[in-house]
Length: 359
Image (cartoon, rainbow, N blue to C red; front, side, top):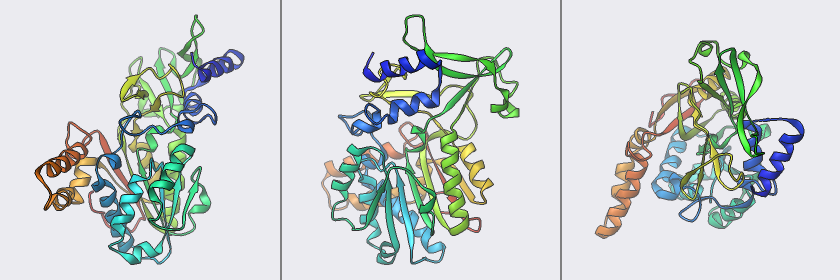
């Protein structure tokens, strides 16, 4: 039992079981011991790797996608570009390099990186140093940022937001909590009272043991983003692993050193995540007056943006080994048995928008 586990156990012993969302918030964001407060989780020596770290084509194509949406909306001369959870800054570095082909877009954009991890924020500043002046950092997304057309990038961000779980029992739906077992270790327990009002009516008669997940944090964040885009323009691109129809099973997982781990073992030392409910995010965005396209598979999205053509261009006049490496990297992003099908792309645009490339 590590220090954060002991702290959470004491909290439960004093006040009773806590919601899974509260457990995730403590495990991931505790200022002293939380996972995202203390480390660089990316790369071979970390716990997982993301698409921008695999291939430069990912960030480059996202830049071209944003430029297309900017042009489709009349090329406004003052816009904001926001990346949620920028990792090491790799995506933004590749994005800005590709955006150099359209100086008018680069000149119109103010950049905000939303990052709560001080370790990663330092790496971002080092990685993007000299790329462009005027980049601002924020710990969280705030409504006042939506004072103009805003373009939001969220790659593997929504999956890290806390979820709540509700389990179908004989007498209704009960919230799944984190409590203590007989030995005093962290364990999943069901709250004693039914809370059927938290579950959509269409799921009320699901089989015993069914699990309904909901992320209030994700829906609240999407509401802010979609409202800003519907009112003032811009676009949002969410890329993550998830589903558009509830799976009715727990998707909460932990990863440590690129391997599966127990979500309740050693909180703060493993990455916790849950699959993104793209159906719920789409419904929220539409309720705010925005248009939604997708979700579509990451493979289909990147194919639609021309990743194959870009890979060929990168490999031109290179040696065979370099061309093979480029093909392997791109294959990892688009192949159905790699990231191509598991990961989905969702775009949010103003109501009047035309269907964007990739969708």
